Image 1 (cartoon, each protein chain N blue to C red):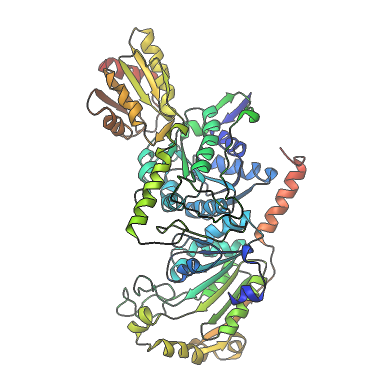
Image 2 (cartoon, helix red, strand yellow):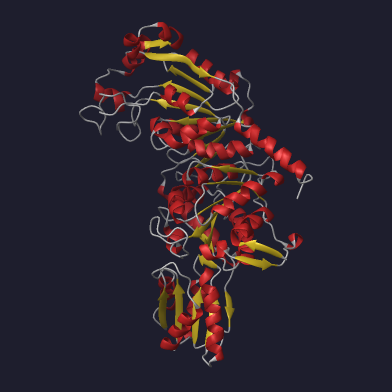
Length: 370
Length: 245
């Protein structure tokens, strides 16, 4: 067994996934990720740098990935806002990297040490323009470890920045987890071009092209400008449209690779609680309490927030009601409503006072709704 | 290009990183590994790249804004770290690509489209900025003094640490038109007439130097280079942990 903090599990998961570079700027409640990475990376031959701000952090991470390293950074809401421009760059230029956001209460400096889930929409839409997003969301220390690895795998496989959306509770909580068996862990590395073949870094005839690291003899251009198959800038509307289509399709075509939904007692339930992150913990207890008192309640937990699993959630329209507890003023609930299209009742339960839900208040809401 | 050729640096060992602006579009015209990044952030991208690929000779091409406005913070910290990348700043004293707005390098009193009555702010002196921030090599030349410019870039590459070469260029459309500087040729001639080697400037009186551009090596010192120092830490930590973990 290992007694790990969530932030520590994140670094250990990153190392297990093959990450050897971290660049970032300290911010509560993510700082332990930087601290632990600074100690743990050098013995692995990895490198750590504390940059002058979060913008530099994400930029150096992208630069390191261009050089061939699996790279990550970690931050919280205010720093996540600063990273948005370069997050879009990584999506446009198709640079694999992992960005961890340990959410805290906002807006602005907010309550720096209090948990919240206020960055769900920022994680999806924070950067400008139409861009794809992959956002994973763990709810336990053990899951932080495994979803960090999956974040790197998806990132490498799809040449796409992946966001691991944690929260203060999950980041700072300590839990015992079973010693991970590194031999059984799936680790995916980016593919490299075949030698002696014409290298097209952004070929149109496949979802994802191999990614040649700088320093291995491939002379080509990487840019955040709209670009053609060779990586050179273009203003040709048709080429631009095909590029944006491909950036989205490469993810749509690989939805089965994304971490799926966890559910419990949902099949026969009249009411399901739809939750994610730290909110899943009191929600699970509320389901137990409800079942004990004879209420037909189940639980569905999202492990991938974006792309939102619209089809799977649409299937919940046969329930009498869906309760969506969130530690914000209602962010994912809008997507649930889009999915069920008014065919069933969707009820929100929100907390934005920096306190975690307790199971009893969720149970109270269940009794009101059912 | 002439410097890379003269120094016989293999093309596969050269990477060009640039920001946003006219100067930065140069990356796309060069047949190397080229990384065209976001506005102001080229040095931060280059820092990550250099850390994982120390064998690369990295040139970072930046303009006025990239280096001293939006990217000012990265500029001073890259200098402080003394990482072995070679910054080349194309100083045309104006934001050229967007149509001639004032920059932190626009001389006080000169006009820009956002300073129609003349720039009230003082401009940075990049050489002083570089020295203050701890750069281990800082030199300036102009597009008239091309041989010197090549020489400065070569000296910068030879410096194991952060090197800054400021290339005084000119923008006849963005800067020249608003400030009645005359034709492109006239602007080039202005550099010919007003540049003075920094060594001579040191012994001239301050009043005459103020009207002139000092060229040549302004600062050079030996300091430990960031990535090499970091690799020493990796080596000692690997030995402590028995070579692997």
